[in-house]
Length: 311
Ligand code: G3H
Ligand code: 13P
Ligand code: ZN
Image 1 (cartoon, rainbow, N blue to C red):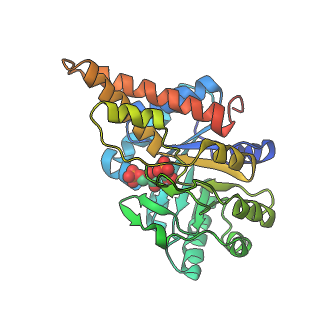
Image 2: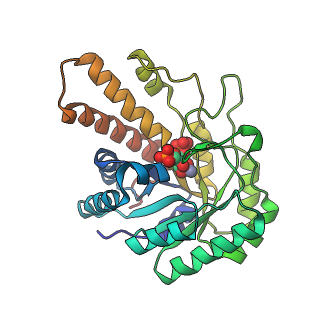
Image 3: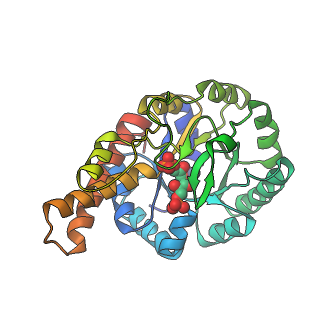
């Protein structure tokens, strides 16, 4: 099936109270893991490409791999540019066939964020592509840029109506307690989302899809495997799945997950080499990594996002 935009995905997700997973991809095995999982769960899915992925893999490879994956299934798949830094980057990906882009000018002053976002929206909509933008600042590590927790800012509900009206965006990423990377909360901290902010934004923007970045849960069973087999992942806590389940039932229609996929991939490879130190065929350990990632994506779709059987 050809790639689709997120428009109809989000309309149904909003109406029926679930969220679509947006999973970051960097290579063929990751794309296969996610698409096979979504296909088996009969779930719509978004595959997204970060700046780091673009640098690592060459986006042309990723685009063709995603198109190949879409040919193997009839579930709706959107291909999304994650954290596009400026108009030129967004334009290049719209031109190359991405069906959705994020313009992330959230670190820019208000007027500038609006102007850049508006420019991307005009170009994207003229080319059949949808646009996500961000208001507020998330802590953590994103595309090699590190934002200290003290500098992070929650999205102000007072700003969302003006921002969406002036820009014409299709979805809005907000800061409501999530953060990028595998260390979101320290042990002892209360890992809660500001669902009150989300609720108020939902009231101000009826029927409008909200996006959560930095929504990995850092599953302790996978971290334990990494650490059991020679890894040193910090004792960190992610976003509890129970919080994400609540957000998915509210206005959140897209939930971004990258770090959890990395943890699963790495756990499987560490385990594989501990158990088979003689192996040197990449298909053996990448096969295990793909299988563990697929299992994790199925878990997210069925137990966290609620998007199974919505394809
Ligand atoms: O923006 C969120 C991504 O997790 C950053 O990933 O290191 O591939 O750029 P990256
Ligand atoms: P995590 O680091 O929590 O997986 O977030 C990923 C993300 O928001 C990508 O844009
Ligand atoms: Zn992000």
